[in-house]
Length: 386
Ligand SMILES: *Cc1c(COP(=O)(O)O)cnc(C)c1O
Image 1 (cartoon, rainbow, N blue to C red):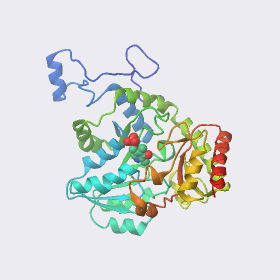
Image 2: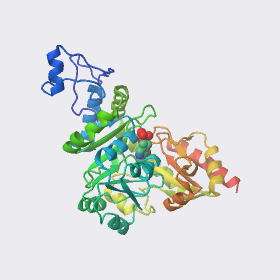
Image 3: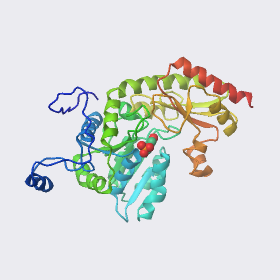
Image 4: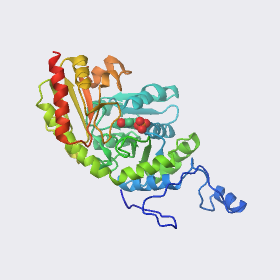
């Protein structure tokens, strides 16, 4: 996260240089020509490659244990390019049902428009996976822990089944972060990130990344991202490089806070359930222990009193902000049923276990006692309205 494959300019700068340039100049017409035939190594244009973006890609690849990485304009740019570059009309894609809102839209609405058959499976339903993967399949997309209820999906077991069906396995690893989960080691083929979340981690810029094998990245993904324009700004890449330097420290401290918050909420009147993958009462605790090295930075819980209770809770908070973003150094809380998961409708929400009282809390770096005071304020407001 700090030193991997540093390339310095002749000035010997300590911090990574920022190459804020769209294009590059050549010494001669011959050099330009040789660059385009591939006989000379030279940057051509920042949509194709940029030294600051390359530095981020190298470092993310080393961190993930991946052969190669392409950084994208956003996390959704990463997910959409990974899928669209790989599939053709007539292909089949299988996905876990509990997905980030826009990922759900890509599977449910976008891919079918291009002649791709898509199938959703409940993440924990192994019979469902077996059935869905009994037919030849091009790709599997899954998210673990899932948004917003933090269900855990068995990456190793599903990768094994998916490979038998001929599919590549794409894991959205945003909630786990590269600190707590390594999907490639569990058998997945491709990992995608919204770097907007923990990797920047300070709520400043958008960005994404796709990581995988050299041949797939260079032959399948790269021609797609280069020619469709899914490029990360060098400025954003530079901000992400700064974020990476403190990623482990931040995420581990946030996870300690999250564990403390989950324990506190579990004993607080006004709160019905508190869900955290690192707590023994999480329904998938054993599996979380097997495939993650930490519980993550998010907590999901349910207030008494349905939507009214949840709104009273959120409106009473002083320190924790109401925001649908996550992975920030500041604690952020959202009511999924009326924000991130509003569009999927009540029936699909019920299927995913997202109740009207559910709140997703992204736990930040505040002092734990300040967070507990704030949560107690929220819980008292829930009770006062009952
Ligand atoms: C935020 C997020 C995305 C999308 O990332 P953007 O950078 O907002 O485009 C995808 N998946 C998960 C799990 C996310 O949290």
